[in-house]
Amino acid sequence: MRLALDEQGITTPIFVGFMPLLSFRNANFLHHEVPGIRLADDTLVRMQQAEADGNEREVGLQIAKETIDAICADFNGVHINTPLRHHEISLELLNYVQAKNAVSV
Image (cartoon, rainbow, N blue to C red; front, side, top):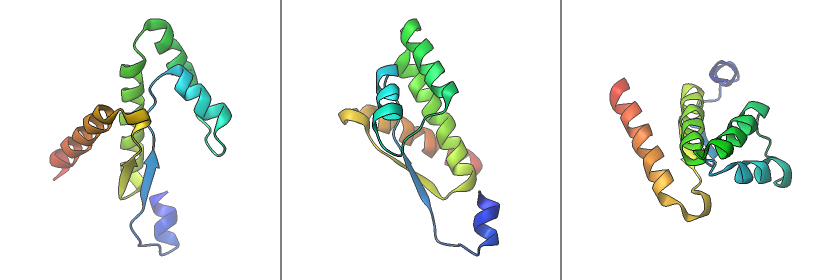
């Protein structure tokens, strides 16, 4: 994506927004009921398995961190949309981003 932006001469900083997943039910709702949101099949499968294993929060946070890594590879930053007033999730992800930036400096 970065190459495509560079080729078009786009230099405006771009921040990509996303919402961390809380549960399989949350993922399924976003995928099927919210216009414009489509989750990858493997993400839905991972969240469904996490529901069965009882570790949805942990898997949702891992997927969020993977998403942050992918976004930061091509864009200038991320906007974390706190799901359902779970500010502690956004704080954990903010700490993750901050730690990533500290390592790469």
